[in-house]
Image (tube, rainbow, N blue to C red; front, side, top):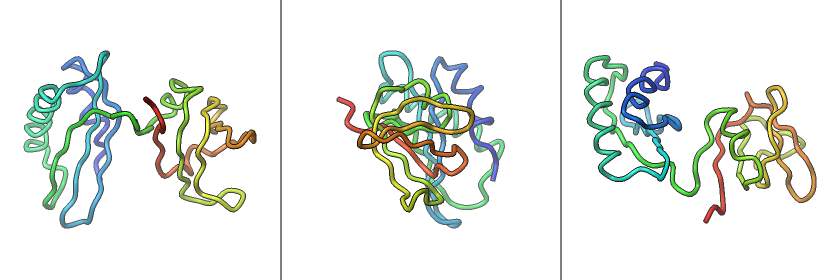
Amino acid sequence: MLDFTALFEPVIESMGYELVGVEFVGSEHNGVLRVYIDKPGGVTIDDCAEASHQLSALLDVEDPIGHRYSLEVSSPGLDRPLFKLDDYRRFVGLRAKIKLAVPMQGRRNFTGQLRGVEDDRVLIEVDNELYELPWPDIARAHLVDQV
């Protein structure tokens, strides 16, 4: 499938937003293309609608998905998803939940405080123990308990 980040980033940035990330969930026949955007002070419903309109037009031209899908544009919210290595650097000190695609030390789920990035490993402290999670093995991650 197409690299949606590369396709969407110029459009979203030209509108004054940050492209937080893109994910496609669902089946091959009917899915949801989720696009998370942000800006200083947060995004509004009108911001999401404007971005959705622009991305819909782009998707109509490019036609990268050969089946039914829905487009959702939203704020990353309080449980902000983490898509890029820079996200793990940016949110050092905050709590995150990370799920690995491949188990490490007998576990896939790690919830704790982000401690940074070294090379291609994400550092997270869980119950006073530091884990170095390989970036390529992270299936999904998001911030937790951010109020």
